[in-house]
Amino acid sequence: MFLTLTTPSGSPVNIVADVFTPGIPGNVTDDFADFTITSVPKNANAITQASDVVLNQQNVTYIRADGNPEVPAPFTRFIGGILVPAGGSVDQNLLVLPASAKLKPPLSDLAFGGGDGQIFLTAVVELFGEDLAGNPVSVKGTIGITARDVLP
Image (cartoon, one colour):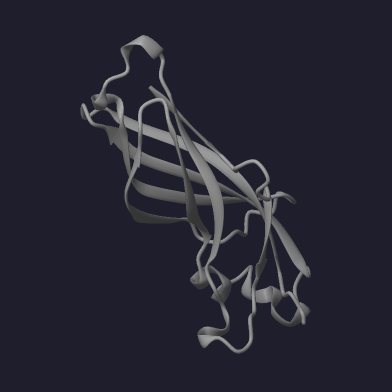
């Protein structure tokens, strides 16, 4: 069994992350993106309930399009046991950029139109768990993020 992680058809493959949002507590918000997690059996004739997958952990790292190594800090979080049935798929809205990342450079430098004006990032999203037989599974996908101060 292996998994794929993609953005659903019709969903954006690039999101805009506003680094300063006046009028809300802290002036920053979390950014989420829609993903489809699909379980693909290696042998379609050997699917059992033990082939179902439960995902429990999410890791996100970042790569800048311009090659600059200054990126938001990676993060890991518990995702609450997402069940992916063997041979099936699940749509999930996942955190791709936490509000706390917007309070530190390089993203905080973009507030009020400062810094480079905008930064193009790729968020590398990795999910980890196991099938119901106890075998470890993981999947990796990406989504583009344009971080900037979205002025009213």
